[in-house]
Structures are given as structure tokens and as C-alpha cells.
Image (cartoon, rainbow over all chains, first blue to last red; front, side, top):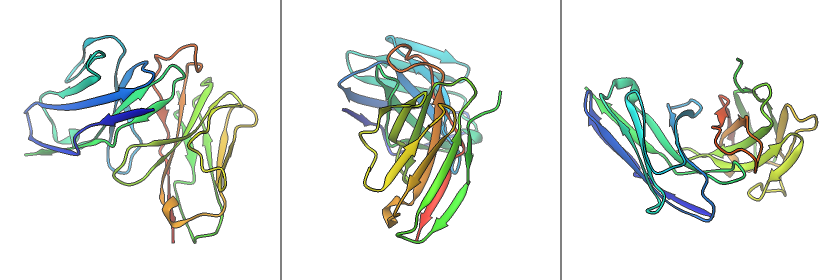
Amino acid sequence: GQNIDQPTEMTATEGAIVQINCTYQTSGFNGLFWYQQHAGEAPTFLSYNVLDGLEEKGRFSSFLSRSKGYSYLLLKELQMKDSASYLCAVGDSWGKFQFGAGTQVVVTP
Amino acid sequence: EAGVAQSPRYKIIEKRQSVAFWCNPISGHATLYWYQQILGQGPKLLIQFQNNGVVDDSQLPKDRFSAERLKGVDSTLKIQPAKLEDSAVYLCASRKGLAGVSTSYEQYFGPGTRLTVT
């Protein structure tokens, strides 16, 4: 099975940077996914890491260290619309995802 | 490209009643998932299909939950009888890749069905 931990809530001001950490313990790892979920809406895909290192996509970047069982999602130049829950998910070789509980990011003016 | 469709969007039932949810995945996506998301938690996988076969249903409470994907396209999830603790959002997701063959594809989620059991 998998155990996935991420902080419950983070608060940051508009224009700032926030880093959401995710640690996992897994019996079968085949990719780390980040999703964004606005209240009352479905999760939407943000990023995917399968190799160690940093993946950059505009204002969002994601990092993975497989040896440490660690990933982070970096949100730069925060905007009010970035207020949402961010879900870390570990995929296995069968395409099955185990999700963390999510980190609620609150962006303040 | 049309996204994952689900219906109904909202459902309120009394405990011990039955309810069914419907999902139509993205065209061409072989893998379909049903998740249960309780408020404040991440989605929890209930069942994974590949075409019309079950890949994983280890977390499906089989005494009351059932799911099928008879023609390998759309799927239904049923709860009978419902309990108060079944109140949650039921999310359907689909994925292009085949289980065990290709794993680099993300899952696409439908809007979900919010179930309230009173």
C-alpha cells in the first residue's frame, strides 16, 4: 500500500511563492502526479514526475526525489484564483492512483 | 474533445434507499475509475476498469456497492442500501493508457455526483 502525507493548509499572499511538500511510502511507484481542485469541482491535472528532478510548467513546477520518497509543488507569482486544494497522487504500474488528503492553499490580497 | 460526463450532479436519498450513478468517459479511454471523496479528504479509489474488465476493486464495499461497465464504454455505480457514511462526492475518471502497459498518462475527472444520505 501507500502512505502519502502533505500539509493540511498553507496561506500566502498574492504574488508570493508557496511550496507544497508531499512525502510518500510506497510498495510500487510509477509516477507522482499533482492535481488542483477548486471547491465543489473535479480535480484537474497539473503535473507529472517519474524521474528525479524538476519539471517546470509556467508558474507551476514540480520536483521529485524517488530515493527520499519526496515531491514538492511550487506555485510562483500567486494569484487569487490559485486558492484551491492541491492533491498529491502516487501512481503504480497498473495506473492506480493513491491520493493524499490535499493541501488547502489560501491566497490573501 | 468532450470531457468525462457524469449524472446526476446531485442526489439526496434516505438511508436504506438505493441510488445509481452514471459515467461516460472520454472517447477512446480504455481505463475507467470510480472514486469516493469525503469532504476534506482526497479521492479514494473504489474500482478500476480496463475496457469491460475489473482491474482492482479491493476497496469497494461489495456488500452494498456494485459497478459495471458492460460494453467497455460507460459505467454505472450503485449503492444498495445506502448508509449515512456514504455521503460524499462520487468521481469518475478515465485514462488513455492501458493498465500495466503504459503508466505515464494522467487521469481526467468528471464533475462528480454529490450524494447526501439523510
